[in-house]
Length: 118
Length: 250
Image 1 (cartoon, one colour):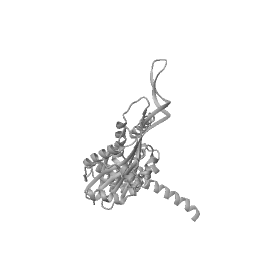
Image 2 (tube, helix red, strand yellow):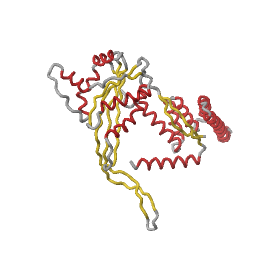
Image 3 (tube, helix red, strand yellow):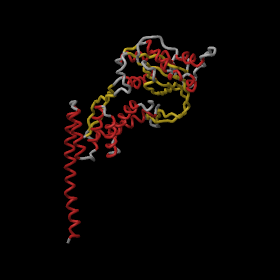
Image 4 (cartoon, chains in turn green, brown):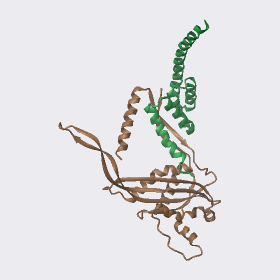
């Protein structure tokens, strides 16, 4: 009886978790959209808050990490920006737009970290 | 030289394709870059001079000093001191020859020739004296090597071809080419005019190559290369904002 119940419970859990994941993505997407709207108005702090929320809600949502990276760059927090770009690329390694953003970021970062500095 | 535009074009195509498939928004950003060196203690800056070598077509000491002074005048809060450029090669030679009869300093043709003069940067007493003379400014000095380059290498370039129907096509062709140009290498050294001690030092190196049949004056190449180095130099002394655009994703 107990053995037969295990697959059933697993099936139920799977069925419940799929819509939950979809909900998480939809919620994260809403936060990302709002973040974009406020960033376009120059409200970068609010945008960061929204994109951080999105990344918390759905940590696998690459656009949230990409946008966060851009916002951190704009705020001058280059270490956080690098980490966020790398996470975005880890999630979507083939995304040409994230790659392009990251390359532009690296150009600035390499220039300022002073590899040749003593 | 040709490979770069081809790569840029292909990445642009990839980005355009990706943009068409995704909800994306281009947004301008300004990345604030903090100065590498805290210069709050200084009100003045003295670009003292450089130990320069390489080609004789450009006076690396004079030109670098003049260029950095003019850049600092417009892009830094520090007051730039106008003074004669220090003949650092002679200063370094005098220090080395002390006690013996004065000798003509050997020409600086290669980077290794600089070694004989570099001790001048560690001469704390000398820089302290200069500092006292100019009311204890931040002192900028260093080395500059501007040398001619010649490279033979395979270069990819685009070539027009016409098929049997007379249709024009552009195809990449790899050819062996002789190229000439210059390299600009050296070090910016920032010295505390109060103590004579080195605060910060930063190496640099840039190259430019042209087709062998192209005649570019050495001075133009020098300014082209310095143009690339100026942002790095300025970012050592003052905070800057670098403008750019990024793509937000939905």
